[in-house]
Length: 338
Image 1 (tube, helix red, strand yellow):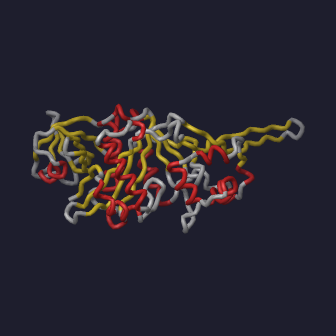
Image 2 (cartoon, one colour):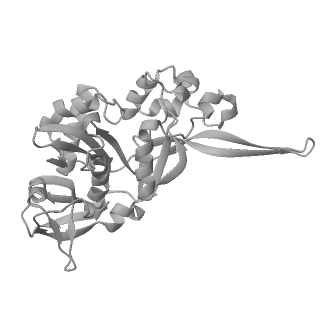
Image 3 (tube, helix red, strand yellow):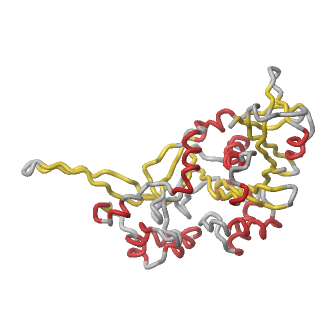
């Protein structure tokens, strides 16, 4: 049995164990950082912080083994006056010489800042041994964020952003950072990535405002600008399937592409609706898969499951699925087909 739920403060040890498998800026393998993330998530679910500061951490549980095996996150707003969303715009600079009859289109990178930024999704990690599970755990971890956005639509912005990882070196270094960012800041990729989580002033102060022509960069760096890393291609495919597109922007640290979509045009957000459950004995693999969620005083719970739709508007789910959601037959839950 697997279910997704909101994180709690007592989850720190297990969330840290999950974070150690990827060690990203959203979910670093650092106890102090994880304690801060989990505490802010708990306060966000409780509505104890301003909406723009809310960050929601979801955990995927293996209920039988009482083990957290994955995470995903939603940031209500990524980009404020205190901490702007920073990116490189990937632009074109067209040049023509009448004398030489030569025409060139140069790719450039121009630093950009968004002080009233979009909602951001991130922090998706699933332990390797649970990938390709027949319960579509990775899809559930991803889709639950969009279901939660729909269930709490007023808290979120009209645009959703996803920053995808590019091809990185085997030691986790970024080739783009080594030829650009390190020269402008004197920091390593990891140092800058960590610092930027809470303090972005150094980027604004030290990065050039003028466009940077990428033809001045080594070919192996130019070729990965805006490219998705091999292990992230599955995420790209999923995002495109539900409406996201490349935004013409990249991360200034690693060159990874930014994908975005208008919130209400994301298929999961569009199609999610409240339904009443009914008990069925079985929902076999031929039945449609859906992400289901419920939010009450007990907290937020969700799961992916096969369901049995009906003409009367109710949806049949098994006793096991009811148990995962913590509800009884006849309950009202949110659902979106995946």
